[in-house]
Image (cartoon, rainbow, N blue to C red; front, side):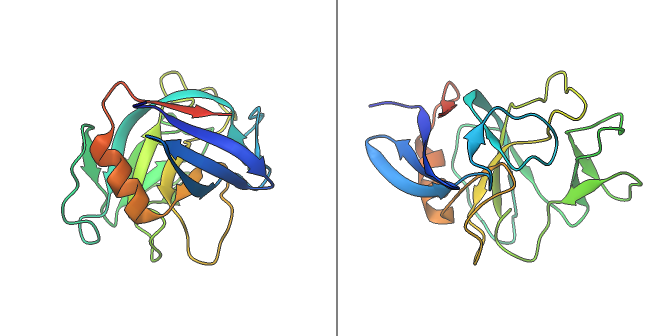
Length: 170
């Protein structure tokens, strides 16, 4: 049994999410998988990544069993996508005066968010902010550079993942 997740590109913005001998459909960036060149390029980066922590909406997911640090998302939770911000590519709280992404959304896309370690430790400006593994968004079959999978499949996968798990995107 493999405890790594493999995201294998198929075509356009579709990929296979492979874990524990099971294959699920998932979506990747609108411009596919490849070398990430800049913020907003809509590419999912190739590479091997680790899971930093999990963000989740307590009002939508009342119990989440997993081996990773879990942080609840509130209405003031945001993610800095502004390369000029001193805390670029980090979770933050409103109010703010910098460009950001709201994490508490009306849809179910960010009900559960797995934060990967892409460009986080020593974030390089303009290289692209967070790569998330998150829930599929209704009526949207691509992401802006993240990986999206069915919420129930994500919950079931997280139950089995050890902290040593790697996400291999190819």
